[in-house]
Picture 1 (cartoon, rainbow, N blue to C red):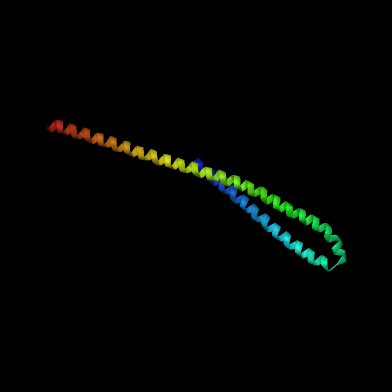
Picture 2: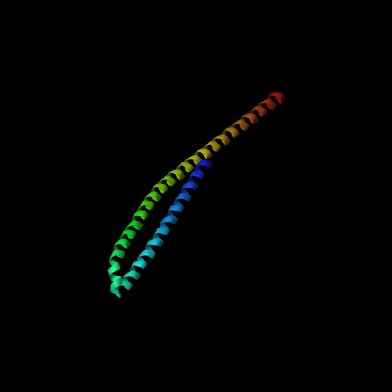
Length: 130
């Protein structure tokens, strides 16, 4: 069970790491979108900037696509880890139920041994006292 818990902890940490990376990508993408709007506004007022803006737009669109691609890759990895985490939780539950069942069986066996010992003592006492 300790191994199953350690596996769950490791997968939860990996999932948290991926979630943090997705959040960072989202922040970068938002900052990038704001920069695109700002550049567009600046380029509309200056003919020289407007000429350069066309090249910027192509690069900015490529960056936007890269953000989306990286986010998709991380989302797929998160999905895989979530599925593995779910399996690890199921395995831990199975182990806990097995341990509980074994403990119950051991308690029953101990109670039966105790009952047999008490029966043996009662028979012994009856045989002596008749």
